[in-house]
Length: 503
Image (cartoon, rainbow, N blue to C red; front, side, top):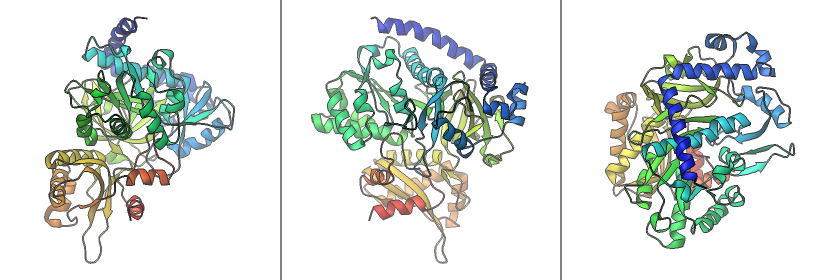
């Protein structure tokens, strides 16, 4: 079957649709809004908030409260027992176990058939469409696509209800056209034991003709390094000569970029970022030349935004539609979706770089920051500072996290960074000084607190043993998939737990 010819035709049609929502973003979002309200009007949630009376987006903001998972949980508990028509009009039988950060209990987010087909799978097709549009005459369907997904466990509350990582839910329901080229087998792809899974993934894919890798950068690195160990090859093109694309998401790619470039030292290797969370598929890097994401506006998701300067969780008073956002301001993302999430604060923050079209960067988490001393350090600052510091000091980092060192009678406050180095710096003091300088360049509040060591001392860098972060995740039963240790914390709970394990 001439898959590449068929896909080429599909691509041209879809690129035209993408250009339309780039040209008419507000109109497209309004169509999504109207469709969502109509689909949920006769659900329990829709009746509670009188959806049939909602005539405008302003009515929606007035009548429907902002929500977080605590507000959704009672409905999820009932959905897990197979009650239906609660927050969405079609059947819900899949639940994405939130990959989120490692703190707190797991969340189980409903996934409808519409969310799979019109959001997640549509996002996958669009990613390839945008890729082909920028690099014509690709032949990706000649080879295999290695997708590194999570585990999926059966929810035994019913015989036809499942939960697992979002990636596993997607794998279990993969459309035939994608399943045809996917590797490894589902039996391996959905394994829960990650150490064994990495071994079987490596053994089963070494002989395949891999064109595409897809997964979280940290775990994909683990797999790739294991494959090179087994094969005794210098780089991945010796194993997979036709490898040309890595589709990544889940964490910032910059701290990992140099390691991938060593594994695949070729200028024609391409890297494309996506923003695909348990709650929905939100963005795709549509232009390889810029590290920004295009907001995907026709996936059955209605977007709202809370300026972080006015963020008070569900009590926030200022909530803006897409038409009122401005560039270079940090916003908490609020979504209403075709899986029955309503005005849901997902916990991620974004900063728009453009409104024609709407492109953005992920800046962090609403609760992942350090502001113990008024420095307001966010994840975006940390990621950029670490990446630039590694470049300047010829260092590579596998994982890291940072948090406050509190003031005492004798000492000022500081930030402590626990870093698992892949390639340690020749001089840790130089590394520390460069990092401090980069943070000052990126964050004026941090710079002010560091000036003259008024309230913040120099950062304290603590190298930790290799494997510590994996050991910690395993200790809390969150090893593998998209689970990750928060980059920044505003208290010492996580730092102290990691340091106890590092003894």
